[in-house]
Image (cartoon, rainbow, N blue to C red):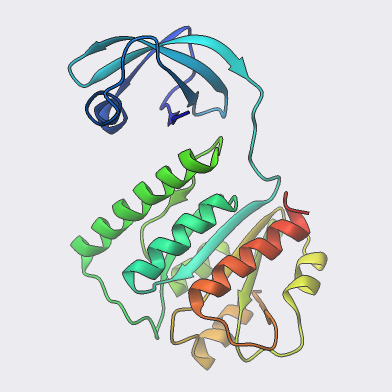
Length: 245
């Protein structure tokens, strides 16, 4: 059954507009009496019936409220250094499926791709659409936000050195401190996983992250591709501190 995210709070009758209404009317060829699952801004879930159609708007009527919270207890942020387009698309999709709360695309020294302001905005919009579709497909009860692309320095300034946030960065030059050990010792309520680009982090960047309180960890004896490292790290974090364990 199709899942929709509604900007507002559930009521006996609501109206869906925009791309979701267009998809229902012109792609799915929906008819009165068909049902959809709707999630509102407060994470409430309901079964609703399509009852009326007008130009680019669909009216839904509440049939049954559902107890269906699928969110992880862990506030998990993926800070992913920019990857080539198809790889970044993949990471966004899988991170949402695994329950990530927020995705922050990060510019670092060894990123292969470079975007001007217009291209960066277009990429963010694309990744947000991918995140929304992944959330619908996997039954999330909250949308994952994909933020604008940010510099590594700004990411650290915004997230480093706080008692409530732990920064864990997967670093190929770290050989002893495991991600498991780091996660088991983590005290913060919010976890930021920092994953490098195809070319990895520079020594200067690694020092900068650690100076801001970031913990360098290893994901094991094999060198993982950046997109593999992202999925592996998120999975381990959810297993240790989230809802996969």
